[in-house]
Length: 77
Image 1 (cartoon, rainbow, N blue to C red):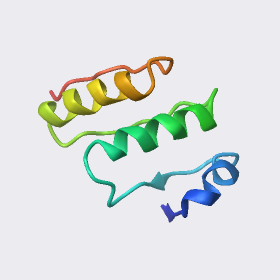
Image 2 (cartoon, helix red, strand yellow; image 1 turned 60 degrees about the vertical axis):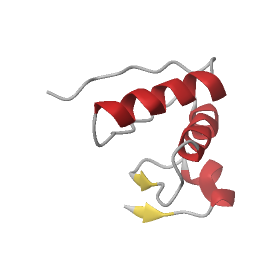
Image 3 (tube, rainbow, N blue to C red; image 1 turned 45 degrees about the vertical axis):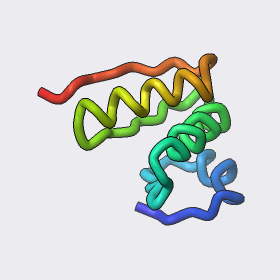
Image 4 (cartoon, rainbow, N blue to C red; image 1 turned 180 degrees about the horizontal axis):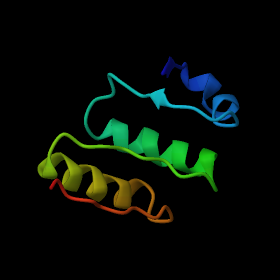
């Protein structure tokens, strides 16, 4: 995994790999993921949540910040 500065997201997304977005407060993570999803299109981004509550809050925030970005929820099993 690689740690990135915000300014290098677009360039990094051109290369295959796994990246970590950490330290973002809850809510701001959804905004960052929405921006990344738009930059990465047509690639797929995966975000794993710690539990169903966080999954639902993140999905709701993504729907607010990026209604144009498709989100799929896979609950814990």
